[in-house]
Length: 257
Image (cartoon, rainbow, N blue to C red; front, side, top):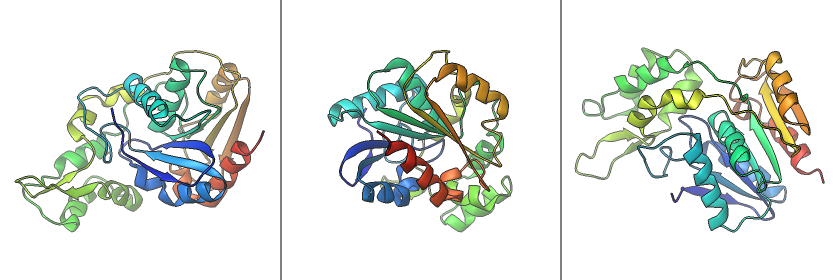
């Protein structure tokens, strides 16, 4: 699958993978900063997200294969991989299937364990937006507000609205809502156990519960060259809530020999 992407800078390849309902645009500011620091940065739209193709098949195995195809197509040598949430799980599955390709891996606010479905309010909100009956983002925001109180979450989702160029001329979601809705349980699955001596950095938000203290034991059992950073005063969207602290943490890790 030919994934949509953006490219910044020159140097060591750094590939960034967004989370669920995200897109490469979410990472533009940080990607430019990484590019200015001596890295050739690729921000990728994973399948069924952003400008990348839609597909009925959607799970970590195919997303890991998409990443492998991307690396091969661009002839990238020893890339560093960085993934947030779902993107972080893609990085972990990629390491499971293709352990000799990346140089270092950064996983942001997700653990290898299984997660119970917890996106129902977001899915209900998205499905409640009927683009055949509305034609402004304000109307869409009002509908989302009936289900979601957090302003940041609403704005994050609204960034995915675009105008279709087909005969409908309607607004729509860039992500493939139907396939995501039908396959949401596959995104919470546990990573099969494996061990790696490759450098791994796990970053968690202090206010987030995605990586808890009991997860650290599992991480230490899997990854013998592990670093763990907790970013203060941040939740699940660590990179958006504390961008400078996040940038410094990642640069410190990826600049090491």
